[in-house]
Length: 302
Image (cartoon, rainbow, N blue to C red; front, side, top):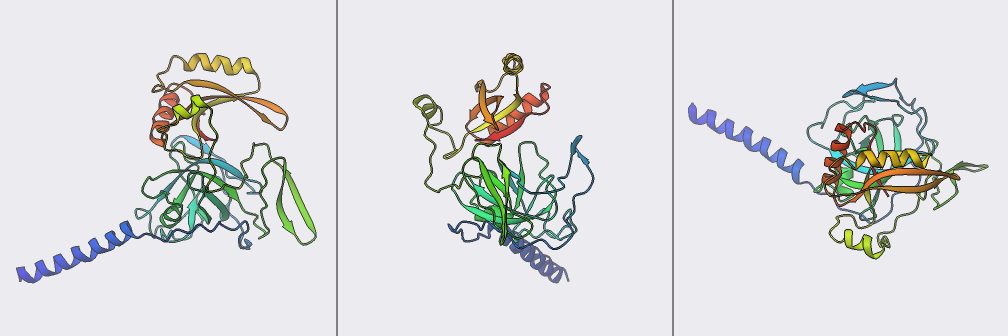
């Protein structure tokens, strides 16, 4: 009887172990084909929801995804959430092409580009998250695998919302961009960022000056720079005041700097720490400045 019980116990353990192993080691074939700039039209009523709190922070769901584009750090989630309900009532499947976002309407199709290798995918946002500071999107296991970021766990990405109507998104580098195209009408919107919608080439490299090249020699980022952004001000004096406060904090050897950018004809003074070599270091510095009272600090990717 004991031998029979032991047999069933070993069988159950083996079966469970194989299942876990398959989930842990399944690798999807990567494709270098760029993701489309259009998605299936969304015909269901989209969910936005009321503002909500997570870990003491309040989030405001967006009423529309039109024109949304952002650079930042992506993460992924897998078997711990497999087959559990998502925020819009679907069942999470780690082997499907889905993602979680804190504020986009549910569902929203987005185009995600890994800025380190130029690989791009299209995923459906059907869940809320990620709620770790410094992350802008949580990808399914399959999506992360196709972007080549499963092993590292994170990657700098560009996220662009695709038109809910099924029209095409036509990215350009500067100025106005066509946000959607229908047979008889083109709709334009202003871009306030500097090239977030630029097409990313697999061979693209950032041209650093000698000092930057020396600093980035051991950096894990090939095409992008990563910073902890502590604040952004219209008045330069306010930015300088924040720089002085930051000088009293140990930022792990990275300097606090002032970076100017032109957004729609308006000069914005951004107070940043970096460039930083790894996501792990950026996480540590972000936590440190937040604990010192800079509660709106974020991880920024250029």
